[in-house]
Length: 166
Image (cartoon, rainbow, N blue to C red; front, side, top):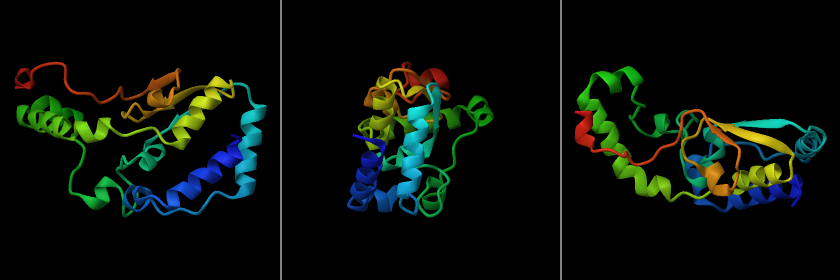
């Protein structure tokens, strides 16, 4: 499937999906000229590295933090725990791991979307060299991308007793 057809499918399928209203910010559809320029770029450059962030996973049902109206900051009063807070307070660590534990079944069941799969295919076709991501959802790996650099590691259930954090 060419990039053009892939992005057209992605836009059409999103319009029918409730995830769009829930987590994907308002946006204009991709223009054919822009899709063609992206396709030409990927076909002409041998060493492309792709950097992704939260926006790539919203279509899989994982909200980002900052998008107006649909991000976690807009929909809840939850803010991420800061590193120093985590280190200084056993209560903060317990809250972090409790939220991680409760949210894990939903979070870990999310599936890679069309864009994750396209990047994996581009890697197999040697159009891109690797994906560098800020995401912790492992959806690039689920899609089959082999060369993924996770800047923030990935989220999983703790491999130790929560009481050890106390």
